[in-house]
Length: 114
Length: 114
Image (cartoon, rainbow over all chains, first blue to last red; front, side, top):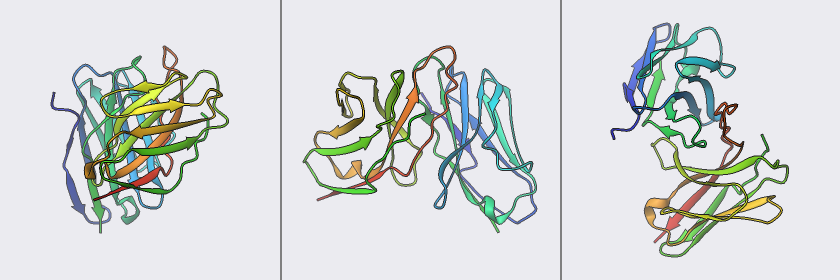
């Protein structure tokens, strides 16, 4: 099992640019989560999907952030336009719904916005 | 979901048992206790969870008090690789209405020393 796959692992961009983060969940999992981690705010849930449908996006900071899950094996988190305060580590996690809260996290994408 | 309280940091000697406490005095009857950990520069990793009985797996043991207001995660023989931030999370029971949301606090930074 390859686990949750995220790309890119590192991203450096300039303020105002569009950033797209990608996630491939574990095969067979039907829930997917996007988290953001910073020193100041810790680990925060941004949005999660059940069966490709967004269930709760209350953690999405503002309209500059958007997430999609076009199919069960792929999700994107887009920031447009990016700002320096978006610099953080973004984690994707997946879970098989109905089997407790055993979420499996990817290695994360380290984003730096200059 | 019930709030949890953990000490910010703890030390443990290599080879000894690490006992990490967590208070969750407002826990409800249908809420489980989950433990995750995050090793530096990695995504969080599920460790164990329980409702009211003590649980053990290949990673750790979970001891929940009879009144369920507190619990202790035990790493029986800590190694240097167990140095990480440990998160105690209380979450409603899983089921068809389960929405999968985990709220991570600040956790306990465990430093295992040689």
